Length: 133
Ligand SMILES: C[C@H](O)[C@H](O)[C@H]1CNC2=NC(N)=NC(=O)C2=N1
Image (cartoon, rainbow, N blue to C red):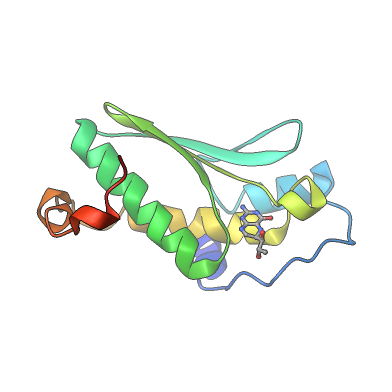
């Protein structure tokens, strides 16, 4: 938990490539700092599936994750549906894992401590021209 908070306090550094992705041993040493996350292969990526009590809670979480990613300039793949949200990070330029991915995972963990607030009210303010058709 303390290790996770330390990781969450860091910021993502731009990764322009030209370096190898983390090897498994290094990745495992970071993984212990973000309990609940797992490493999936090809390319190596960091993933966690979160459970919620309904669709809107999962949607709310997915949107908060999206906002966090945009703020940090490091973006998750997000898949959500009724009662679940899967969040995946890897670093595209190096086709694998970078410390940025673990920093983001630790920050996403912090979102789980925030209270649920529905998003439908704020979405009502979206101008018609901004809507997708
Ligand atoms: C140019 C820009 O910084 C890059 O394309 C960023 C954007 N967001 C990203 N997000 C993730 N998850 N991995 C990346 O390699 C990545 N690269």
